[in-house]
Length: 480
Ligand code: NAD
Image (cartoon, rainbow, N blue to C red):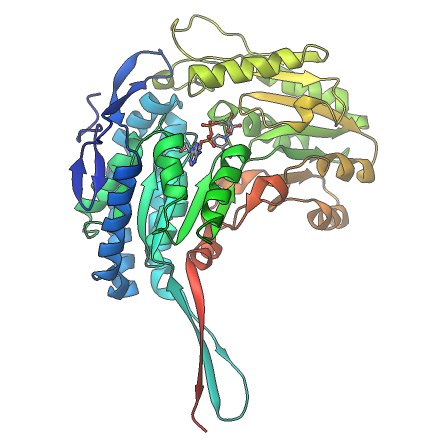
């Protein structure tokens, strides 16, 4: 791929580009299905070497590097990412199948994470605690040491920004395991980090299969904290492996996030959010809004207006930069098409047309379903494709019961002009983030993010992420 300025078939361990003992894995362009290169097939021995390198870097000086200096390095890295935004976007578009505009937004977000966490590094304060006479008690926020980061393929740059960016700012040394389907921007990021002056070994990257490199990292006794984003089943496996070493884990596992549209909603403002939050990144978004709950009085109108938007969606190769690209892989395409078949008993309110597309690409037709009850399998399961269901409700009580009626709890939004209702629902909705008359708040690197229930636990983004990447130490001094 001509945009790459580095050889992607290596791991980065201790500052050295290192081939994996098991060789390489093929890399495919989701827009065409063509093989476009190879990445390292890292495994247990590369993970061992990376954890060792991180430990040496941490104890060899990174743990004594002043917070302001760590912050400066991250801000320099943010600038380098900013300068490379166009090439990073092109690399991501080819690797992940994301329309260029969306890939570009991810690169811009990565730069912003680095700016935010670079600036925050020296503002991570402890407290003094009033205690008994003759004592001074204070807390220190110390890095865990070596942190492991297992990243999925849907938003590699954003997830690296919020996870690795925060961990480095807090003073940890990192081992990053990107997804086998999408690791090019992780390698590009690591190369830019070297150029920004991040000491060798502070950031190590081991691409490879989940069952090999991912499993080795989650079970590694030399790792002090793990951050995982991906499926519930893999999250559970990571947590079980980490539990054997009593290692804390942050899990971000996706959702079935609802938007609640009440009769008094400002529909003109709501409509783009209702659809975009379902089809962005071909629906492969942990916070995708896959359930649209609409008060019966406006149900027909909302369904019709959403259907118009679906009919106008343009699907095509990432580099054509249309509304929806392919999904990540042939496997994901099969999964999403399987979900569409499970909707055979529902009405297809609208389906985008798949026109003239490259034959081998992994395209699925964005589909809007109606006629489902809240307990239908399509209203309960994370589909991870451009598929939404629209469900009517009568009143606020029913809306809350539907919204809270899945195993997940990541994001929810309320469209209503009534202030008291907004406040009531902000409290009663089971979700890590609630949006009032918007959805997603533009990503918001400052805004703590994470789930409850099967959406996971722990918080990323904002200052909360920094707290998660530190261990709190209490110091009690008796001086009489
Ligand atoms: P996954 O959860 O298996 O993969 C996510 C990451 O975990 C990848 O880096 C992968 O290599 C790694 N991994 C896989 N098995 C592992 C193991 N045993 N130990 C440690 N790490 C391991 O997800 P997937 O198979 O790529 O996708 C399957 C489904 O997961 C999707 O259809 C979607 O529903 C969901 N998903 C959710 C998110 C999210 O952001 N919440 C992201 C990706 C996928």
